Length: 376
Image (cartoon, rainbow, N blue to C red; front, side, top):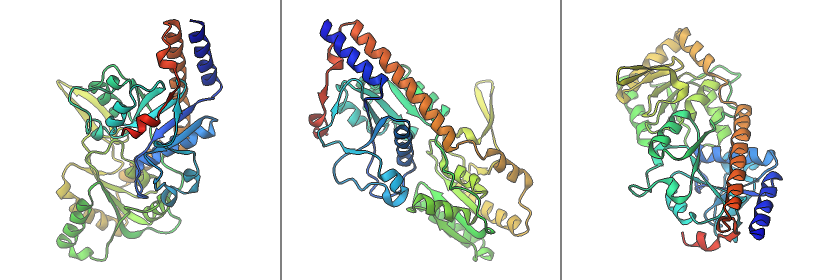
């Protein structure tokens, strides 16, 4: 009993003094920009600024990193390979993206606190066995990016604790000092969708053959922001978007957006929602030109180009864009990150105290994870 008490006090002391590690597992994007990975890096960056020991964890030593698209500020954050000799104990935290349920299974016996990092509802069930819940693997908490996703997760896993930390739009997404050009920036989840839109537009509206389409795929984030700010219009198609950063980046850049409404309507697109009988009716904000019909997008582009050339862009659209700006700043995200993780740490201390009170030594032993990671 005395040994358990002593070990428990040691763990609690480390939690109080920020003397613990946090490991955030990320997919190796092979140097390609991925918004979800960028958001995880933002959490790690902020946590280190707050004095915590947060690390990016990648699968092996051949990790390509993010230097070429996020820059050295993020590339220089602490990194660790999952195949290295990593020790985890009860005061440490492990964060796994929702798609890697296989890793959740492999790490279920670790004594550290285990948290799901879920940014895309679309991937939650991708590798999860039928009938299996995250809580079956001792992942009892999840961080997600919106209340809509939090509600969906609670429907799947009622016993899980959800924590919402919205994304942030970097300050370099801003209006261009020069007049916008007849360029349409286009971002689609499937590259073939972008090709279809462009080909259809030129076939239907040869009058606008001088309009240039720019696909921003593969650019560094700052080059992406510069290219977007030069455009007079942005087009977005992502049916399974969990949050949707591109429209917000366009709004901050004063670039009007034509977009297909995704399956899960993001909160920044909703005016309000009300119940009418058994149906929930959602009113869409006028902060973009939104459609449910993919085939209608070329016509909407042509209509917009006409009013843009005539300097008759609807005032209510411009006002809707202006009113939607400034919601997701880096400062507001930093505040949410600090509050959310302090809640996680506080809850963990309560869990450890309960383990000590119940004389449970198993879950506060220090465990070497090398064998676990190699088993993947």
